[in-house]
Image (cartoon, rainbow, N blue to C red; front, top):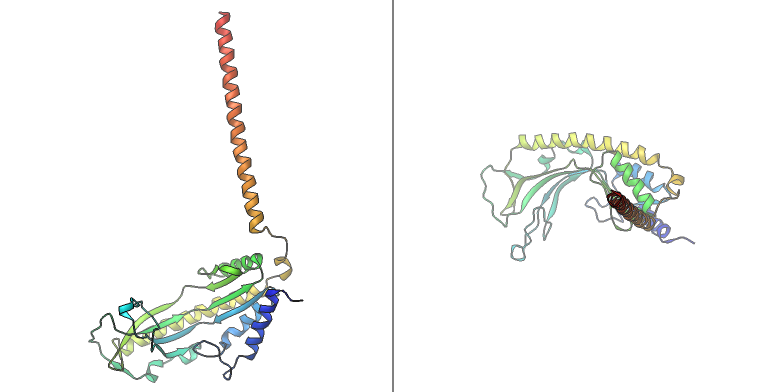
Length: 273
């Protein structure tokens, strides 16, 4: 009989296998990012891991939603009502001259206020969320990710590991004005940040390939070797603390006894003289 992790993994793998344009997921693309499939397959081939979400890296241009200023919802990047994707790609080959496909109005003179809905240009690197069977597996995957330079990674509740790296871009390039997409930067500037994004794509894929190789090398059997649990570690720390306290107490008692002996010796010597 399958345990809860195996049941969850089987359900996720079935969902992955059935994902298509006819059965989209919740991402803007609607289907699994093809560039992410090799590393997804590597993770899911491990007995004690399964991916729950992924993105190989992407460039997106996003129009913020309506900000509910009266309710205090003014955070930058807020999706809100009527927020929408203007452009999205996971493939750097499709990034060239992307802005020519958008009906931008170029205007270097602009006025904004707290209600302004900005247009944000973003590069977001690889991110993976992986559910692990237990703490030893989660810790091993976390260590592998950190060793490959994914310094923003972390272990969440229920042994869920988020694998992240900080090579992102997040740049305001325009705003919505009377229904028009107005950009307050030039085409030359858009070309510049596109070049920066291409450089980040290169670094991103280099790191992804490094992580892929490291995950391939994970030995399922070693993961299952006896590892100290949180409760065992807690009990060990308690015992070590008690041992240190007893050691300090015994040392104080010894020093006190030595002092008393020395005082008694000195008293006897004084009496004899």
